[in-house]
Image (tube, rainbow, N blue to C red; front, side, top):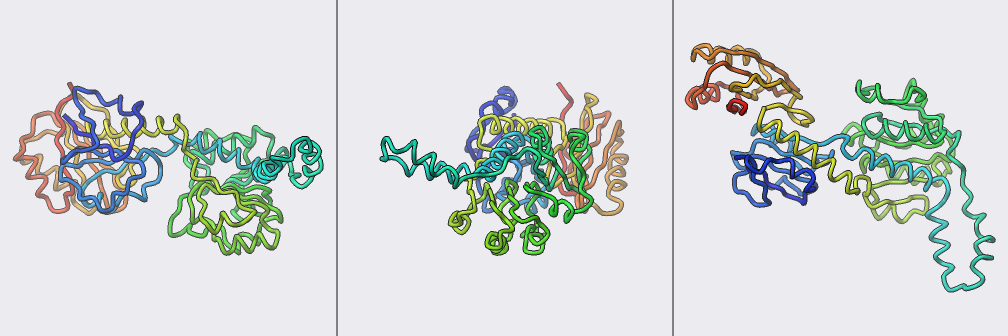
Length: 391
């Protein structure tokens, strides 16, 4: 019986995928096998030695102590792409918000309450203050063509926009799904210089903090409109305010507002609503649950942020899963112990990611706890689990 602890409210659509005869799900467990979390802060949590995995129902994992988990052999999963459609729809809405001055016009119109029969006349007189360009035929530059960026590019192209994309690390799946009409920018500066609208879809790393700054703004067209639904911190605020004053940037829409941004009349601050749809929450929960189940039952890893993606079909027998430091001779040391114990390997898969290696080993015969302990005692081993035969 596996115990799954929930640190936030997780969609029942996902939790129902845990079979009740093999899983217990609750918000309080002293020794959970896995944890499901959304936004709860986990950096100060003392993890039980029994904890094997953490599933983040969402993409960002800043609330999880990744390095600590890796050292303890805890696999951390996230759910990239599960909320992609929800974010895409909000980005498309933001293109219109930034372009047609809808927020400003609606706010102004609300101020006419109490004017009675004069409202229609005042509306006609004041509407010229909120004129804005159409999207059709304009150029959108999409920086980052992952699950969300790809959908944004395709949707904008369907609206009649010319779309230019830049992503030197685009995945095969995204490339296959991308509309053939989306143009590939030869460089980032090339994209910036020709775009009427720019949408950011890159992670926040040390290398991307302040990604859009003074030097990048100088390359852009005058009056550009920028959308940031990726992460706060990707845009240098001081340089952005300077770009507002010079007329370089006409509008900035962000899902990550702070007080400074909200004070500026050229900023449309959305209260982090990118993934706030019931469909998105369900999709994230389903993906997180399925990944946790496959890992606990089969040792397979998909969408981990700290361990290599590793998957192998079960052959019906016992399975060893082993995590170790990615150093020379580890595979040899592991297989030597198995050979000494007369344990025959039926199939084996080894993958590594940075300093971590992960092994799935299917075996033809049973393995005792004493034999597992001998593997665990090999220097450099981080985690060992023996999985029973598939029922």
